[in-house]
Length: 212
Image (tube, rainbow, N blue to C red; front, top):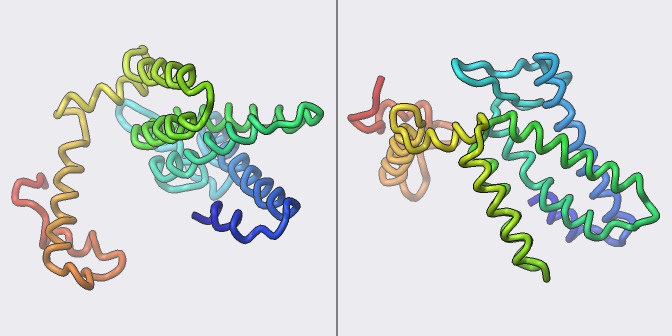
């Protein structure tokens, strides 16, 4: 929203370039923080460690949550593709920077193991390439990528296949959490229950079959 708002407020090409440069710099720093967190065990921003579970290690970059971090990274992919298509061949440094940015962002997005963010990224690219003349080729490439993420012997592939196993998947719990949110909305549809009070009201509205 802020990105598109910046486009609307830009008075000329110079301001627009400045907005894009700031945006790309922020994404580059965030991606670099995730790489450092994966390599050294902590991010140089806020010194947050990677999150270790029984089966996975997931990076969070400068943020607290790996899903928030991965979701933050998603817009850089369609933005970078558009910029690459408009690349001036005389400015090779710009090409090198964009390739590096996409490479780092792809790595930390994968290491976040966030299924939702990767699905969002793929959908955004499907929507983006629908405006291109070579959309059929792009559709085929994205379909192959989607297949690899599901069938390849990768950690992310295992994460996606866990969706089919109720004992390993968090899908059931998320459905219960959504049911709780719906109950809260029904209780006060006009004014809600207050900002940031979901966890406070959760014990009152949680489903009877919720574990714990």
